[in-house]
Image (tube, rainbow over all chains, first blue to last red; front, side, top):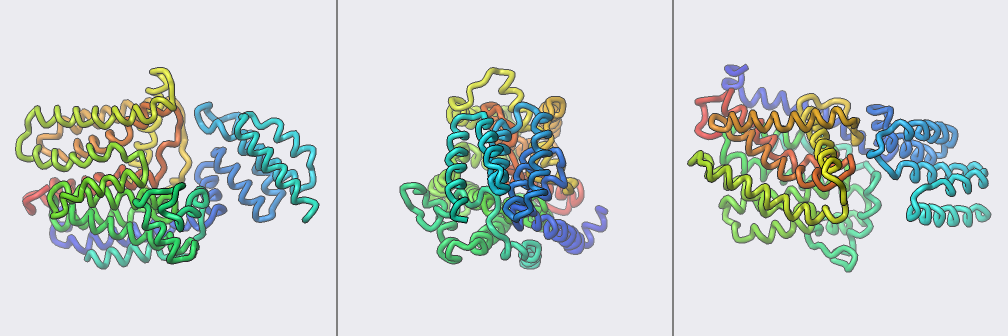
Length: 141
Length: 321
């Protein structure tokens, strides 16, 4: 390798560059959209709470409410398994997204109960605000 | 060759023009057209204002500006590398910097572009600091870097590292190593002041935070060697974190032992430690590093790869290293 490199440095660097460019080209696709990003995260780390919640939220935005609910249920299980230091906000984020899903499904009471469970005061206030805004748009839609 | 590498980089990132805003992007890009504004007064971020003007707020222009900055950074790294390394070693450093897949989060994710912009300022400051004709502007460039993100407050001290490298090459004295220690202290102190008040925690929690960030850094270092199956999510557990903490001290010991025959690994560790130790010590949370944070953190890693080439593969072929 040493002799080869001394003899043909440009060729070897070019080969390394092409291989890296190919791997980067594939990896770049991860950042195409929220859906590709969180799908990739869940694919690489199936136990990721943040990844599963965000994939659920993105799936919900795409209109697939059934898959979104399944992902939120999975997140609910995963939150109980995660270390305490990882994402204290997970429960809040999950409940807020799940409540929006419930509203989209027309299950307003369930949505209300989820918002009551949101544990952190400041976040709960913003979540409730969001809930009211979403509720206000329902009659119009 | 450099032009070919640049073209290959553009090709590798050719899909970003059609990408949208992702995740955190929308939290801040809408401020870009109003720079400077009471909400966002940093002139350091003018490149993003330019992107907003150019694309009318559409993502393609932000992606384009970040990619352009990535290319500029590669050229600046080339100028820096050529001061110490052979042409082949410098090419290896730039190839890895431009095309390694660990850079994709910083370049393809608009929010990651903040690290790319900060790196542009840092590289300009380093080149200015070691005498590239614009030394008098170094302070201003550093101010711009800090304007990009406050976490770069330790930069003025970090930029001295290349200078210490040059001195150390001339005389391997105890004074140099003492200077490095003093430098680390100077870096750590303001960082502790910045974050310490907000993150009150006991000693064990701080050590745990330190272990966690070392685990994150170790994980990304491993991904440089084997860049597959990485994402912005991490796997944490206490055992792994302690292993990373012990491993970091092991690496430090090895680099100190090697310093007389190969100084680069030690300086590389000093740079990385200066970045991550203050953050690790004062924070109690995981996820302090993702790939785009590694863009600036791992800057000397690419130079280290070139240095390795000069020292152990091309030994005797070059005058530097």
